Length: 127
Image: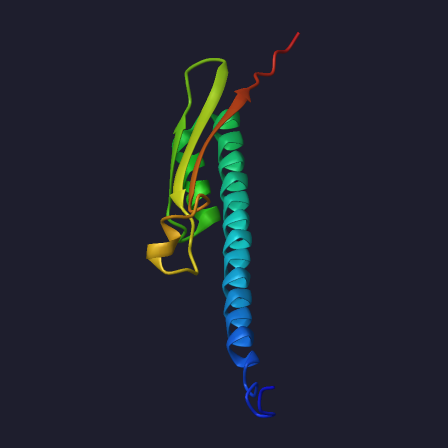
């Protein structure tokens, strides 16, 4: 039979491990939500810029609208406006901001944004 004080402090290691595991899981969950939010904002801003390019035919105005919308976010946008009717193609590439160390952030699948949008150009025809 063990002495009465032999088990004293045995739960400290398990509690510390559980706390560290919980905090790492919480950090990954926050990083995932942050990345989903950034992807949503960038996609929305690119769609708005593409609509402007489809309506006006001016890719430069659309790119400046995109840059005003996203601010200092590190994303590149390329807008192609073909002559005449057709579709406006918006290509977006960027890197999501990270809360994790760069060594871990590179391994995550949601660290970058790479989207391509096609927006139809519509022309009003008077009868």
